[in-house]
Image (cartoon, rainbow, N blue to C red):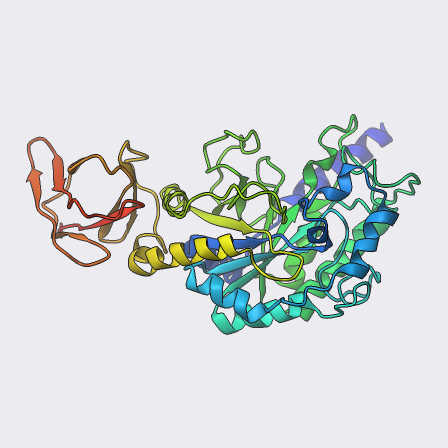
Length: 434
Protein backbone atom coordinates (compact mmCIF):
# COMPACT_ATOMS: atom_id res chain seq x y z
CA UNK A 1 0.00 0.00 0.00
CA UNK A 2 2.85 2.38 0.82
CA UNK A 3 4.36 1.68 -2.59
CA UNK A 4 1.03 2.45 -4.25
CA UNK A 5 0.73 5.73 -2.34
CA UNK A 6 4.29 6.67 -3.27
CA UNK A 7 3.68 5.98 -6.94
CA UNK A 8 0.41 7.93 -6.84
CA UNK A 9 2.15 10.87 -5.15
CA UNK A 10 4.93 10.81 -7.74
CA UNK A 11 2.38 10.70 -10.57
CA UNK A 12 0.35 13.60 -9.17
CA UNK A 13 3.50 15.62 -8.46
CA UNK A 14 4.59 15.15 -12.06
CA UNK A 15 1.21 16.30 -13.32
CA UNK A 16 1.21 19.36 -11.09
CA UNK A 17 4.78 20.28 -12.02
CA UNK A 18 4.07 19.97 -15.74
CA UNK A 19 0.96 22.17 -15.44
CA UNK A 20 2.69 25.05 -13.69
CA UNK A 21 3.95 26.84 -16.78
CA UNK A 22 2.49 30.32 -16.96
CA UNK A 23 4.12 32.39 -19.69
CA UNK A 24 5.45 35.76 -18.63
CA UNK A 25 4.19 38.96 -20.21
CA UNK A 26 7.50 39.14 -22.09
CA UNK A 27 6.83 35.67 -23.46
CA UNK A 28 3.27 36.55 -24.46
CA UNK A 29 4.55 39.65 -26.24
CA UNK A 30 7.16 37.52 -28.02
CA UNK A 31 4.34 35.23 -29.16
CA UNK A 32 2.39 38.18 -30.54
CA UNK A 33 5.47 39.50 -32.32
CA UNK A 34 6.14 36.05 -33.75
CA UNK A 35 2.57 35.70 -35.00
CA UNK A 36 2.74 39.05 -36.76
CA UNK A 37 5.84 37.98 -38.75
CA UNK A 38 3.99 35.43 -40.90
CA UNK A 39 7.08 34.66 -43.01
CA UNK A 40 10.48 33.30 -42.05
CA UNK A 41 13.43 31.49 -43.64
CA UNK A 42 14.72 28.10 -42.47
CA UNK A 43 18.44 27.38 -43.02
CA UNK A 44 19.57 23.73 -42.91
CA UNK A 45 23.36 23.88 -42.98
CA UNK A 46 26.06 21.64 -41.58
CA UNK A 47 28.97 19.40 -42.60
CA UNK A 48 26.44 17.16 -44.36
CA UNK A 49 26.42 19.77 -47.13
CA UNK A 50 29.92 18.60 -48.15
CA UNK A 51 28.37 15.31 -49.32
CA UNK A 52 25.63 17.25 -51.20
CA UNK A 53 23.16 14.48 -50.41
CA UNK A 54 20.89 16.07 -47.82
CA UNK A 55 20.97 16.35 -44.05
CA UNK A 56 20.27 12.63 -43.34
CA UNK A 57 23.33 11.33 -45.20
CA UNK A 58 24.91 9.86 -42.07
CA UNK A 59 21.87 7.62 -41.69
CA UNK A 60 22.49 6.05 -45.11
CA UNK A 61 25.05 3.51 -43.89
CA UNK A 62 28.19 5.50 -43.09
CA UNK A 63 29.95 4.91 -39.80
CA UNK A 64 30.36 7.92 -37.57
CA UNK A 65 34.15 7.60 -37.93
CA UNK A 66 33.95 8.03 -41.71
CA UNK A 67 31.27 10.70 -41.60
CA UNK A 68 33.10 12.88 -39.09
CA UNK A 69 36.03 13.21 -41.53
CA UNK A 70 33.85 15.66 -43.45
CA UNK A 71 34.55 18.22 -40.75
CA UNK A 72 38.21 18.47 -41.76
CA UNK A 73 37.11 19.30 -45.33
CA UNK A 74 34.46 21.85 -44.40
CA UNK A 75 35.76 25.25 -45.44
CA UNK A 76 32.86 27.45 -46.65
CA UNK A 77 35.08 30.14 -48.12
CA UNK A 78 32.15 32.09 -49.59
CA UNK A 79 30.08 32.27 -46.42
CA UNK A 80 28.92 35.84 -45.89
CA UNK A 81 26.43 36.22 -43.06
CA UNK A 82 25.67 39.83 -44.05
CA UNK A 83 24.83 38.77 -47.61
CA UNK A 84 22.55 36.02 -46.28
CA UNK A 85 20.75 38.40 -43.92
CA UNK A 86 20.37 41.09 -46.59
CA UNK A 87 18.87 38.63 -49.10
CA UNK A 88 16.50 37.25 -46.49
CA UNK A 89 15.45 40.71 -45.33
CA UNK A 90 14.83 41.80 -48.94
CA UNK A 91 12.54 38.79 -49.43
CA UNK A 92 10.15 40.17 -46.85
CA UNK A 93 10.93 37.46 -44.29
CA UNK A 94 11.02 38.69 -40.71
CA UNK A 95 12.87 35.91 -38.97
CA UNK A 96 15.48 33.20 -39.52
CA UNK A 97 15.63 29.69 -38.05
CA UNK A 98 19.15 28.26 -38.26
CA UNK A 99 20.28 24.68 -37.58
CA UNK A 100 22.63 25.01 -34.63
CA UNK A 101 22.92 21.22 -34.39
CA UNK A 102 21.31 18.52 -36.52
CA UNK A 103 20.94 14.76 -35.98
CA UNK A 104 24.60 14.20 -36.95
CA UNK A 105 25.56 15.85 -33.65
CA UNK A 106 27.82 18.46 -35.24
CA UNK A 107 27.55 21.87 -33.57
CA UNK A 108 27.56 24.85 -35.90
CA UNK A 109 28.64 27.11 -33.05
CA UNK A 110 31.43 27.40 -30.50
CA UNK A 111 30.79 25.00 -27.62
CA UNK A 112 32.79 23.71 -24.67
CA UNK A 113 30.89 20.41 -24.60
CA UNK A 114 33.10 18.76 -27.26
CA UNK A 115 35.52 19.56 -30.07
CA UNK A 116 33.01 18.29 -32.62
CA UNK A 117 32.02 21.79 -33.70
CA UNK A 118 32.75 24.24 -36.49
CA UNK A 119 35.35 26.21 -34.51
CA UNK A 120 37.45 23.25 -33.35
CA UNK A 121 36.92 20.48 -35.93
CA UNK A 122 37.11 22.39 -39.21
CA UNK A 123 39.85 24.43 -40.90
CA UNK A 124 37.29 27.26 -41.18
CA UNK A 125 37.42 27.83 -37.40
CA UNK A 126 34.81 30.61 -37.49
CA UNK A 127 31.69 30.76 -35.38
CA UNK A 128 29.15 31.07 -38.19
CA UNK A 129 26.28 31.35 -35.73
CA UNK A 130 27.89 34.35 -34.06
CA UNK A 131 28.32 36.03 -37.45
CA UNK A 132 24.76 35.20 -38.49
CA UNK A 133 23.33 36.42 -35.19
CA UNK A 134 25.07 39.77 -35.63
CA UNK A 135 23.95 40.06 -39.25
CA UNK A 136 20.33 39.27 -38.33
CA UNK A 137 20.42 41.88 -35.59
CA UNK A 138 21.71 44.49 -38.03
CA UNK A 139 18.87 43.68 -40.44
CA UNK A 140 16.18 43.58 -37.75
CA UNK A 141 15.54 39.88 -38.24
CA UNK A 142 14.46 37.71 -35.33
CA UNK A 143 16.67 34.64 -34.81
CA UNK A 144 15.40 31.19 -33.88
CA UNK A 145 17.64 28.15 -33.52
CA UNK A 146 16.88 24.62 -34.65
CA UNK A 147 18.29 22.08 -32.19
CA UNK A 148 18.15 18.29 -32.59
CA UNK A 149 17.42 16.42 -29.38
CA UNK A 150 18.45 13.14 -31.02
CA UNK A 151 22.09 12.46 -31.80
CA UNK A 152 23.55 9.78 -34.08
CA UNK A 153 27.07 10.40 -32.78
CA UNK A 154 27.14 10.64 -29.00
CA UNK A 155 27.53 7.33 -27.20
CA UNK A 156 25.24 8.34 -24.33
CA UNK A 157 22.21 9.12 -26.51
CA UNK A 158 19.72 6.20 -26.28
CA UNK A 159 19.22 5.37 -29.94
CA UNK A 160 15.63 5.09 -31.12
CA UNK A 161 14.32 4.03 -34.51
CA UNK A 162 17.05 5.94 -36.40
CA UNK A 163 20.81 5.99 -36.21
CA UNK A 164 21.54 2.31 -35.56
CA UNK A 165 23.66 2.12 -38.70
CA UNK A 166 26.07 4.78 -37.48
CA UNK A 167 27.68 3.12 -34.48
CA UNK A 168 28.35 -0.33 -33.04
CA UNK A 169 28.95 0.33 -29.36
CA UNK A 170 26.18 1.64 -27.14
CA UNK A 171 26.57 3.31 -23.76
CA UNK A 172 23.18 5.00 -23.38
CA UNK A 173 22.81 7.33 -20.43
CA UNK A 174 20.04 9.86 -20.84
CA UNK A 175 21.00 11.65 -17.62
CA UNK A 176 24.39 12.66 -19.00
CA UNK A 177 22.91 13.36 -22.44
CA UNK A 178 20.21 15.55 -20.87
CA UNK A 179 22.88 17.51 -19.00
CA UNK A 180 24.79 17.90 -22.27
CA UNK A 181 21.71 19.41 -23.96
CA UNK A 182 21.14 21.77 -21.03
CA UNK A 183 24.74 22.95 -21.27
CA UNK A 184 24.49 23.57 -25.01
CA UNK A 185 21.18 25.38 -24.72
CA UNK A 186 22.67 27.55 -22.00
CA UNK A 187 25.52 28.42 -24.37
CA UNK A 188 23.07 29.27 -27.14
CA UNK A 189 20.95 31.53 -24.97
CA UNK A 190 23.80 33.28 -23.17
CA UNK A 191 26.48 33.61 -25.85
CA UNK A 192 24.05 34.73 -28.58
CA UNK A 193 21.91 37.40 -26.96
CA UNK A 194 19.35 37.94 -29.72
CA UNK A 195 18.08 34.34 -29.92
CA UNK A 196 14.31 34.60 -29.50
CA UNK A 197 13.21 31.01 -30.09
CA UNK A 198 14.25 27.33 -30.00
CA UNK A 199 12.99 24.85 -32.61
CA UNK A 200 13.43 21.27 -31.36
CA UNK A 201 13.41 18.17 -33.56
CA UNK A 202 13.88 14.43 -33.08
CA UNK A 203 11.25 13.67 -30.42
CA UNK A 204 9.68 11.16 -32.84
CA UNK A 205 12.86 9.01 -32.69
CA UNK A 206 11.38 6.99 -29.82
CA UNK A 207 7.79 6.79 -31.07
CA UNK A 208 8.16 3.06 -31.77
CA UNK A 209 9.59 2.16 -28.33
CA UNK A 210 7.68 -0.62 -26.57
CA UNK A 211 8.11 1.27 -23.28
CA UNK A 212 7.38 5.02 -23.61
CA UNK A 213 10.59 7.02 -23.53
CA UNK A 214 10.70 9.93 -21.08
CA UNK A 215 12.35 12.85 -22.86
CA UNK A 216 11.79 15.03 -19.75
CA UNK A 217 10.59 17.84 -21.98
CA UNK A 218 8.56 19.74 -19.33
CA UNK A 219 11.68 19.81 -17.17
CA UNK A 220 13.77 20.92 -20.14
CA UNK A 221 11.29 23.66 -21.01
CA UNK A 222 11.19 24.94 -17.42
CA UNK A 223 14.98 25.14 -17.46
CA UNK A 224 14.89 27.19 -20.68
CA UNK A 225 12.18 29.55 -19.50
CA UNK A 226 14.01 30.13 -16.22
CA UNK A 227 17.10 30.97 -18.24
CA UNK A 228 15.21 33.25 -20.63
CA UNK A 229 11.46 33.64 -19.97
CA UNK A 230 10.76 35.34 -23.30
CA UNK A 231 12.34 32.52 -25.36
CA UNK A 232 9.74 30.80 -27.53
CA UNK A 233 9.79 26.99 -27.58
CA UNK A 234 8.44 24.75 -30.33
CA UNK A 235 8.92 21.04 -30.96
CA UNK A 236 8.52 19.17 -34.23
CA UNK A 237 7.05 16.09 -32.54
CA UNK A 238 3.88 15.83 -34.69
CA UNK A 239 1.64 15.53 -31.61
CA UNK A 240 -0.48 17.78 -29.42
CA UNK A 241 1.71 20.51 -27.87
CA UNK A 242 3.47 19.58 -24.64
CA UNK A 243 3.06 21.82 -21.61
CA UNK A 244 5.66 24.58 -21.79
CA UNK A 245 5.67 25.02 -25.57
CA UNK A 246 4.96 28.48 -26.97
CA UNK A 247 4.15 27.77 -30.61
CA UNK A 248 2.94 24.79 -32.62
CA UNK A 249 4.57 23.63 -35.82
CA UNK A 250 3.36 21.61 -38.78
CA UNK A 251 5.82 19.88 -41.12
CA UNK A 252 5.25 20.14 -44.88
CA UNK A 253 1.53 20.88 -44.47
CA UNK A 254 -0.64 23.78 -43.49
CA UNK A 255 -2.53 23.44 -40.19
CA UNK A 256 -5.54 21.21 -40.71
CA UNK A 257 -4.01 19.46 -43.72
CA UNK A 258 -2.03 16.23 -43.63
CA UNK A 259 -1.00 15.27 -47.14
CA UNK A 260 2.55 14.34 -46.02
CA UNK A 261 1.36 12.27 -43.06
CA UNK A 262 3.28 14.37 -40.53
CA UNK A 263 0.69 16.93 -39.43
CA UNK A 264 -2.41 15.09 -38.23
CA UNK A 265 -2.34 16.69 -34.79
CA UNK A 266 -5.11 18.96 -33.59
CA UNK A 267 -4.64 22.69 -33.97
CA UNK A 268 -3.94 24.39 -30.66
CA UNK A 269 -4.51 27.95 -29.43
CA UNK A 270 -0.77 28.64 -29.69
CA UNK A 271 0.86 30.62 -32.52
CA UNK A 272 1.18 28.38 -35.59
CA UNK A 273 4.01 27.75 -38.02
CA UNK A 274 4.25 25.58 -41.13
CA UNK A 275 7.70 24.59 -42.41
CA UNK A 276 8.23 23.67 -46.06
CA UNK A 277 11.12 23.25 -48.47
CA UNK A 278 11.77 25.37 -51.55
CA UNK A 279 12.73 22.23 -53.46
CA UNK A 280 12.60 18.67 -52.08
CA UNK A 281 15.30 18.39 -49.41
CA UNK A 282 16.04 20.33 -46.26
CA UNK A 283 19.84 20.11 -46.47
CA UNK A 284 21.72 20.79 -49.70
CA UNK A 285 21.40 18.06 -52.33
CA UNK A 286 23.15 18.82 -55.59
CA UNK A 287 20.70 16.83 -57.75
CA UNK A 288 17.61 18.38 -56.19
CA UNK A 289 16.67 21.18 -58.57
CA UNK A 290 12.94 20.62 -58.21
CA UNK A 291 12.27 24.13 -56.94
CA UNK A 292 8.74 25.40 -56.50
CA UNK A 293 8.00 28.41 -58.66
CA UNK A 294 7.95 31.92 -57.25
CA UNK A 295 4.20 31.99 -57.86
CA UNK A 296 3.68 28.77 -55.86
CA UNK A 297 5.72 30.10 -52.95
CA UNK A 298 3.86 33.43 -52.88
CA UNK A 299 0.56 31.59 -52.82
CA UNK A 300 1.85 29.35 -50.02
CA UNK A 301 2.70 32.42 -47.92
CA UNK A 302 -0.83 33.74 -48.47
CA UNK A 303 -2.46 30.36 -47.76
CA UNK A 304 -0.49 30.08 -44.52
CA UNK A 305 -1.53 33.56 -43.38
CA UNK A 306 -5.13 32.68 -44.30
CA UNK A 307 -4.90 29.92 -41.68
CA UNK A 308 -3.36 32.29 -39.10
CA UNK A 309 -0.04 30.53 -39.57
CA UNK A 310 3.51 31.58 -40.31
CA UNK A 311 5.38 29.99 -43.21
CA UNK A 312 8.97 28.91 -42.48
CA UNK A 313 10.47 28.40 -45.93
CA UNK A 314 13.65 26.31 -46.11
CA UNK A 315 16.90 26.84 -47.99
CA UNK A 316 19.84 24.41 -47.89
CA UNK A 317 23.07 26.46 -48.24
CA UNK A 318 25.90 25.00 -50.35
CA UNK A 319 29.11 23.64 -48.82
CA UNK A 320 31.02 26.72 -50.04
CA UNK A 321 28.77 28.93 -47.89
CA UNK A 322 26.62 30.39 -50.65
CA UNK A 323 22.84 30.24 -50.87
CA UNK A 324 21.91 28.41 -54.11
CA UNK A 325 21.31 30.73 -57.06
CA UNK A 326 17.78 29.42 -57.62
CA UNK A 327 16.92 30.01 -53.97
CA UNK A 328 18.19 33.59 -54.23
CA UNK A 329 16.08 34.08 -57.35
CA UNK A 330 12.99 32.88 -55.47
CA UNK A 331 13.77 35.22 -52.57
CA UNK A 332 14.00 38.17 -54.95
CA UNK A 333 10.67 37.32 -56.60
CA UNK A 334 8.94 36.90 -53.25
CA UNK A 335 10.48 40.17 -52.06
CA UNK A 336 9.08 42.15 -54.98
CA UNK A 337 5.59 40.83 -54.25
CA UNK A 338 5.90 41.33 -50.48
CA UNK A 339 7.07 44.91 -50.92
CA UNK A 340 3.81 45.69 -52.72
CA UNK A 341 1.47 43.36 -50.84
CA UNK A 342 3.03 42.65 -47.45
CA UNK A 343 0.28 44.53 -45.63
CA UNK A 344 -2.06 41.66 -46.53
CA UNK A 345 0.30 39.18 -44.81
CA UNK A 346 1.98 40.76 -41.79
CA UNK A 347 -0.16 40.80 -38.67
CA UNK A 348 -3.19 39.31 -40.41
CA UNK A 349 -5.46 36.47 -39.33
CA UNK A 350 -7.83 34.01 -40.93
CA UNK A 351 -11.43 34.84 -41.85
CA UNK A 352 -14.67 32.85 -41.79
CA UNK A 353 -14.56 32.41 -45.57
CA UNK A 354 -11.90 29.69 -45.64
CA UNK A 355 -10.22 28.66 -48.89
CA UNK A 356 -12.19 29.45 -52.04
CA UNK A 357 -11.88 28.24 -55.67
CA UNK A 358 -10.36 31.62 -56.54
CA UNK A 359 -7.99 31.91 -53.57
CA UNK A 360 -7.97 32.87 -49.89
CA UNK A 361 -8.65 35.80 -47.58
CA UNK A 362 -6.81 37.45 -44.71
CA UNK A 363 -7.87 40.28 -42.44
CA UNK A 364 -6.80 42.87 -39.93
CA UNK A 365 -8.84 45.52 -38.16
CA UNK A 366 -10.94 47.43 -40.67
CA UNK A 367 -9.61 45.55 -43.73
CA UNK A 368 -10.36 42.39 -45.62
CA UNK A 369 -7.77 41.20 -48.15
CA UNK A 370 -8.73 38.98 -51.07
CA UNK A 371 -5.87 36.91 -52.48
CA UNK A 372 -6.83 35.88 -56.01
CA UNK A 373 -4.86 32.99 -57.46
CA UNK A 374 -7.25 32.12 -60.31
CA UNK A 375 -6.51 33.91 -63.56
CA UNK A 376 -9.52 32.68 -65.61
CA UNK A 377 -12.21 34.87 -64.07
CA UNK A 378 -13.19 38.49 -64.64
CA UNK A 379 -14.94 39.02 -61.30
CA UNK A 380 -15.12 37.65 -57.80
CA UNK A 381 -18.26 37.24 -55.70
CA UNK A 382 -17.95 37.06 -51.92
CA UNK A 383 -20.55 36.91 -49.13
CA UNK A 384 -20.92 40.31 -47.46
CA UNK A 385 -23.10 40.75 -44.39
CA UNK A 386 -21.89 44.19 -43.30
CA UNK A 387 -22.52 47.65 -44.65
CA UNK A 388 -21.30 48.90 -48.00
CA UNK A 389 -17.47 48.94 -48.07
CA UNK A 390 -15.68 52.25 -47.79
CA UNK A 391 -13.25 51.42 -50.58
CA UNK A 392 -12.34 48.49 -52.81
CA UNK A 393 -8.92 48.81 -54.41
CA UNK A 394 -5.87 47.03 -55.71
CA UNK A 395 -3.53 46.81 -52.74
CA UNK A 396 -0.28 47.09 -54.71
CA UNK A 397 -1.21 50.27 -56.58
CA UNK A 398 -4.17 51.75 -54.72
CA UNK A 399 -6.23 51.69 -57.92
CA UNK A 400 -10.00 51.67 -57.16
CA UNK A 401 -11.91 48.67 -58.51
CA UNK A 402 -15.54 48.72 -59.69
CA UNK A 403 -17.86 46.65 -57.53
CA UNK A 404 -21.52 45.92 -56.88
CA UNK A 405 -22.88 45.66 -53.36
CA UNK A 406 -26.22 43.88 -52.97
CA UNK A 407 -27.62 44.22 -49.48
CA UNK A 408 -30.53 41.84 -50.16
CA UNK A 409 -28.42 38.96 -51.45
CA UNK A 410 -25.60 39.85 -49.05
CA UNK A 411 -22.98 39.72 -51.77
CA UNK A 412 -20.09 41.82 -53.01
CA UNK A 413 -19.13 41.41 -56.66
CA UNK A 414 -15.79 42.94 -57.66
CA UNK A 415 -14.67 43.38 -61.26
CA UNK A 416 -11.08 42.37 -61.96
CA UNK A 417 -8.55 43.99 -64.30
CA UNK A 418 -7.19 41.79 -67.09
CA UNK A 419 -3.57 42.75 -66.39
CA UNK A 420 -3.59 41.67 -62.76
CA UNK A 421 -0.78 39.82 -60.96
CA UNK A 422 -1.12 36.16 -61.89
CA UNK A 423 0.70 34.91 -58.77
CA UNK A 424 -1.54 36.56 -56.18
CA UNK A 425 -3.61 39.61 -57.00
CA UNK A 426 -4.55 41.25 -53.71
CA UNK A 427 -7.67 43.37 -53.25
CA UNK A 428 -8.09 45.49 -50.15
CA UNK A 429 -11.68 45.96 -49.00
CA UNK A 430 -11.98 48.61 -46.31
CA UNK A 431 -15.05 47.94 -44.25
CA UNK A 432 -17.61 50.64 -43.52
CA UNK A 433 -18.15 52.06 -40.06
CA UNK A 434 -20.91 50.46 -38.00
